[in-house]
Length: 199
Image (tube, rainbow, N blue to C red; front, side, top):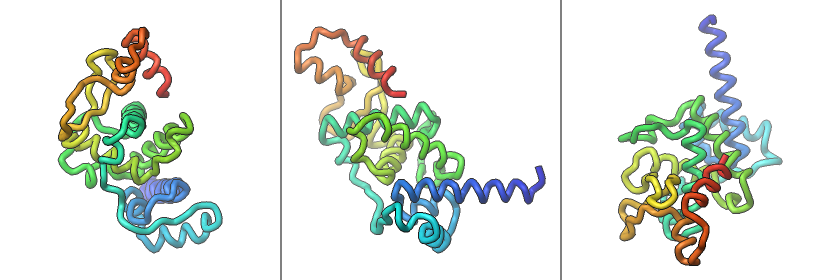
């Protein structure tokens, strides 16, 4: 492949990713970070193609992980999102010191959007998570300092834990809920149902 052809394909992939992220209402700074395009180019792109169909947001990126750690349903959403990130290879196998610098790229950005689109399509409960929140969680997963994915000690499913919180239980939300309800369903069955429902 000639160098000019490669540059054209990369440039086209960057624009395709920008369009995809614009449809998910990502901030301009986020799109620039993942595509390498300039802010002025992203804004022109939006005005030319998506002004009538997608909202544009201004302000700072979300940073409060507590939003997803303080309640069972939101923690479950975050755990499910982590599963999609792992399954589509958005999340690296090893923890990163500086994921904000290491993760963003055009190729990983397309994987990110694919994971997010599948996550949103899974059910109505995922509708409230934005792409910006999903990226915030991805960075936290990759760094592994505050939140971490572990194996549930009951059913063997992957479980999200707050490493700084007072509760360090290895049990997932589903098993804890089954315990509270005194369910007779086996923990292993719960874990299997969860895993098969994810993807």
